[in-house]
Length: 139
Image (cartoon, rainbow, N blue to C red; front, side, top):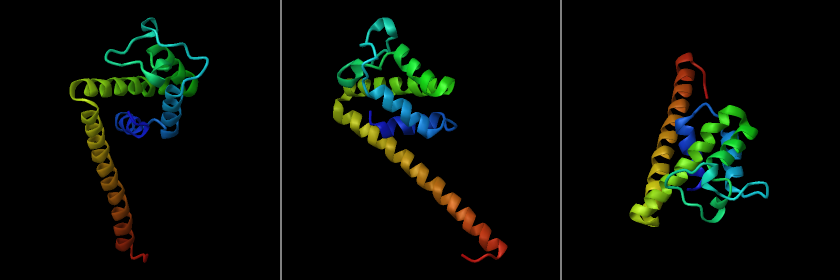
């Protein structure tokens, strides 16, 4: 799953978690490091998650939660677990409908969230400018 999608899903589920923390935890999980043990079911398997490519490291529950705790304390745990679950969800979409279906589902999700963010920003702008007009301020 694209990093932007991970971040948007986490923002939707946990809006109070600092986006910089989310970005950092996701980045560490997705970037294999020499200290990370290779994937092993003993370290906590996520059903439906494949362990290919960069996922051979950092994509088991124990390592991901360790990364979360060291990086962000207890607030980081939902970020790490959601990262693994969204990767597993994408793998299941690929298995069910192929990579194109997974890409389309991810694109639709990102489009819906982007439209929601636009509307939210538009409301903030309109309410701010209408408040100025009610108060008789210019500009």
